[in-house]
Length: 99
Image (cartoon, rainbow, N blue to C red):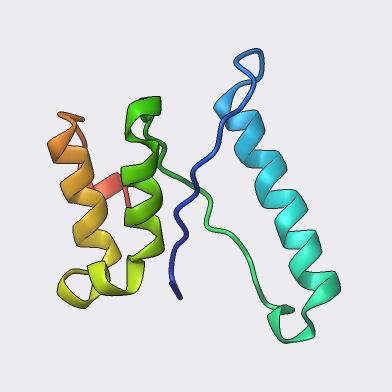
């Protein structure tokens, strides 16, 4: 998608999610800048959202990720993200999500 990415991965539990995301963003930005000249202006936004997934739901999540264009014909990324927060009972103040 042009404005976001969904990733499904496992990571070591002895490393924080914040550390993982910092490394992911740094390495992927470097790769994009070095490999794809057209993406010289690429930059990640400051924040991210993360949801844990039961291993029994891995195939469902893979299917969801693979069908992003279809999902976003009916709703924007912002609508999708807010729905995920609501469905999972995560309290939020929208003023602080999109800065």
